[in-house]
Length: 390
Image (cartoon, rainbow, N blue to C red):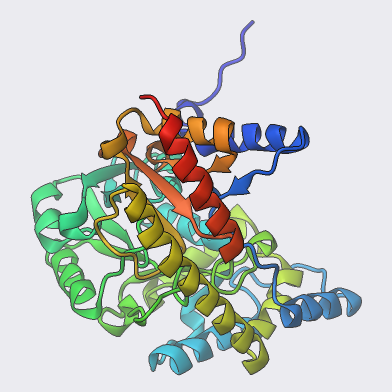
């Protein structure tokens, strides 16, 4: 008999870029020099003080489960970070440490979304957001956004798309794939729009710390009832450690803790001990130097791509991505990406991974390579454009 699998597993789409990544790895194995601008992972390894703290934790035998909400001292350190960086007083009891930002998203979607209900999400946006909703038998109401909205949800869009099945909205600031921010007033207006409708506001702040020329506002500055997703992966450079956190209203913590106990027991104890070093002055100095390096990369790649004819209508203020319109060159984004990988050995991501709205006309570049490699990439892209045939 032919085995059958769940409908949800069939409905959750793969990352389309993974096919390109597999081909890029094949090309590398054949001896080709591939420049990787496709994966959203900093090229910097985890900062030395964090690694040392992790090694010390292993040597000290900190290899057992922690409480489901995480180490008390880490939750206190995260609360201290909100105080020093944002001037906010966040009770550590409201913070849950999770297995990556994905763990925080799993908890939030499990708590807030019943089968058939939905969140409003900007399209384009991070694909796992809608896939987690499908996992809990909810739905994503994708709202087309573009340069006019700086690729973000607005109160007017909430009003237009809200219906009887809506229970909330998830926004990201800075956003993946566009790098755009929501300022304090915009967050307050969204909060009001959701509160008026009895909905929840969930904000992905995973790229906080990686902003350029402006500081990102936390939604907690204007809405203490919002749910905040964050991660140690991006600014803190701990991608492989799989560690994040969720800030929730006090009344939601007991239910979230119960979900955490059942879904994953606890986040990695070794990673949690290592993360205590994230907030030390020496570590933060390293991280700020890396932020400055990302700013220099953005300031090189953005005008260089525009000069080649890529349309990047909104200057990104955060994260490490450029979301570019390729309409001027014609053709489909996936074929476009495949062309540059095969002919020039430069890998970047087709818009199809980020939603449906004009996805075939967009690509994402991740400036997660150093400046000399980005300069090489631009030279190769310029050459590849001359041979591109839609």
